[in-house]
Image 1 (tube, rainbow, N blue to C red):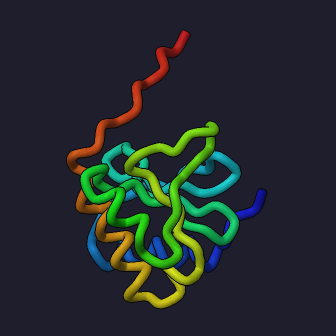
Image 2 (image 1 turned 135 degrees about the vertical axis):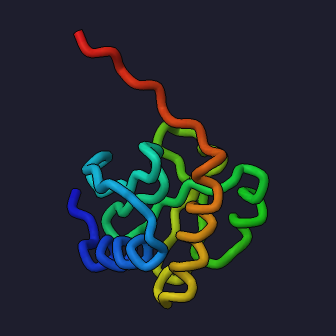
Length: 116
């Protein structure tokens, strides 16, 4: 599955203008942006995945173009997918990226697998 490279460039540009240190990591058939070694946002085809505060998750789902992330057959609270109508304009994309950045310090890092 290919990801939208222009969308990935828009996200990189946002993080760079915020002086945010990040790493790009290919996963789930897309590109994930890691901040402080934690998943912050990702690009899958033409959608953005954002990790936001679970306390604003329900409210976020009411916004145009936002829907629940459902990889495993059940929604993952705090993770949303954003379609074109939610991210087409830079101001709209930046709104969601800022929500993800704001939550990042509170987010738990995934458990590291032990090397054998």
